[in-house]
Length: 637
Image (tube, rainbow, N blue to C red; front, top):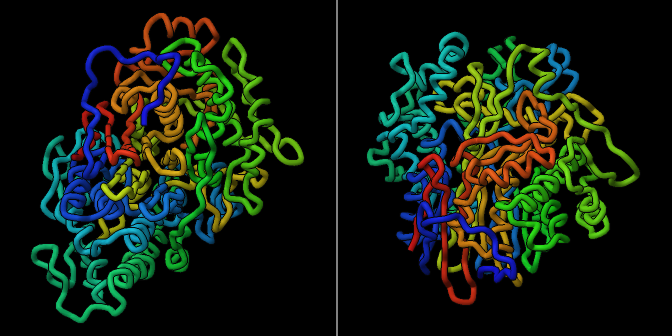
């Protein structure tokens, strides 16, 4: 399935950090080794890729709580063995009915906060994963959730990054968010790296969902204990099961999530004013009615062709089509201009990304009319965008014109201007882990997982939000709400403006690639605004350059900051490019000579990609995962 390029790309020297896994049974990959191990276990026990992905996702809630949680969001793209047509699982929650621009302005806000319940979209991740299991899986909910329940009750070794983030926000926890301090600092301090930590409250939530599928709820106690005894975490209650089989039992669990004790606890808790990132205390606006009405669904994927491959993404309510536009711009370039490890290639890619992301920030959003992707991805429009790429770096914000004319521009506040206004420097981070301030605001986020089975089912999913540092933990539930509404503007003229019932223009952007109508590659990465940028490098190296999966993941990465950030404080850095030092002195000097403001991020710091691949002709399966940070892993046979 590899490309056969006439102009070979630069291959990273020496052996890869890990092998590209090969086999015919099943492959899994994720941003945490425990989730990968659990997913592979599901495959080994006869589950399909969707059973495995759902099990892994709930485990990620437990083991990567700084990157995602049940109070957050998810998007996924999948294809089944029976129908290879790619579809999007829409697990991005919308703004509550009370989340109006007028209300936020009345609270004295000029932007959606970076933390606190006013920044929370209605949580949809759990319902979305249960939808995947209900419609595409084969396992019972009890068996799928057993892995996460075990991790939450028996404990798991806490990541050093989790410990560091709790330490960073410890003062906010102790002074303003006592429920978070009780959950994450039960002994009065952040846990030590490697220490076993437990979350019995969230385990009780999951047990209650399992019990709901049997016709009754276990109940959720304040101490995290379920109201019905399930001693080993796997035995269903003895009461009669709901009629209708497995799907009906999962549907009952979904209803329990949306309108049961979890929703009631959330709606009650957010009424209490609490500290937000603006330094003031505000009450949230989410209600039980918002939660009860929130239901995940399946969307048509946006697709575009590139060098004989079909790339599938979310619609323009998220940032997914930005990758399609970047590929379309680059499709008109020679292979010699597409290698990210060369000066010419890196420059061309950075310039294409600036153009695609400018269109994202001006045109994308959850609007009535939607975005005209037919025009945005048309050869004529892409040719005009490609013509803007010059020999030197652009420091301008250059969106294209769609429809009847120019659109309103988002605020363009530079890092320096923000620092002058607030006296605080902007830290963009590098690795895709959140850069967290003591008050909890984060830039970047997210987990990722991929799975493919021997039958040809395949999924790429990017869960995020509900980070432990997002807002106060909800007592008795073991998690907090997310902050995705910070991606919406308090400006009615913008398509991504804050509007009740509308989805924020999410950064969550998994990818599925098809060849001759068959799904062959699932990939993705955490990283906020960098997600599609790092995936673009990977896809170019695999689809054009012919690199092996692990080679493409290991190869030096880069990205641009020359666009308004999606996360608070939403600044931009005109002409700035962040690169790994392994790109080489000659290439870096060449980029600087072209006018790029280059920031060196170290040798191994950018990107957290994982992927799985299948060859429909031979049945061969492959997988690879990022070694940066020594956390992500692939498994398979």
